[in-house]
Image (cartoon, rainbow over all chains, first blue to last red; front, side, top):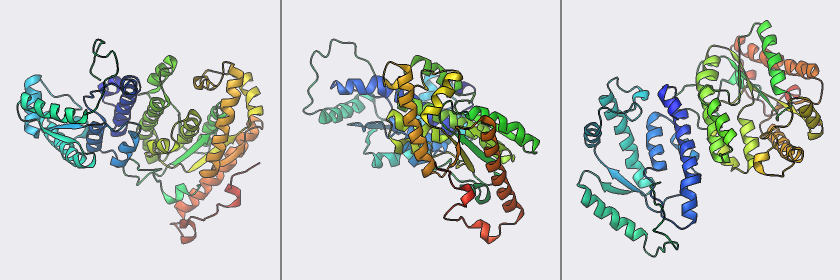
Length: 178
Length: 262
């Protein structure tokens, strides 16, 4: 994956397929086994990222959905929504510059990374808005402060987990983010 | 099937929405068949012949993209892939060659000879237990070839040919499927099932079937005959400003193009 990204050799389709390889590998080794053991898996990004990002790059929406049809539907999918300017401010204050693909520079919408980010990520956000209905994503307003976002997230997670019984001997193992 | 060059190119499925299919005057010729059947030998013999005939030729083969060939070989060496990740890697390799090699060559009027094509993935995935519908969707960005020449062989003729050649290897013997610990038995079972799948695909996609039990030069002569016939038809269509009787696709292919069944 890094090899392809570094050389800037990727087309929208190979970009999409290589991310799918990475996802399939994580699904096989890190997501499915704990689910089968009755554990809770927290996934920071899921197939919806590909549906937004890859379609904004130009692949067919039906193709990318079929591509990921091996992925199980999550029990709860949270979408943290922010306007484009907020995400740009947050990214630029956190690090020196935007990543090439994150700014959609490969799509050729603008030669300046910040302009390109605005145009490319606006496309992505439009697609996410449509995905919200299609896949019943629960929207969290991510412009607010973290404690109030967290309050909402915990309420949604608690509702979903009603009646959940953790498998035995859980809690003293090494937890990890998936 | 052979009318592809006359009709213009089409996508197999959803295609690549960001690429237009106009102006691809070249020809995409696919050689299919199972491991060890002699595909590569035949493909290598076809290239100089076509070049002497005055055609520009661009050969391509499965897992030969600069982007992924190395990754796939490393991953296979580790045996850490399941059918889904392996299929996705093959698809990425194929997409890379399609967009960076095959389509540009077709645009420049080359004859592209593909040693294996998406049908190899279709056949292998069925044997490995992947959902066939998923595999077909996955490769929906492929171009429909103008001509598919299928080298058909049976297991009894395949076994000695492979043993006289480079021998039975881990993957071609389907050892990853754990059909048994004996490589010879595993090879037979795996290749028998693969050949069944290829034969089913040959019927479904109307490949031109060539009897691959014959000597190399005889097979080569048959392949050249089919390619000559196809190119003549495509040439007539290009020169003849598309008269209505060629523009219509016949429901039954002419007898000379119909798959030879034994």
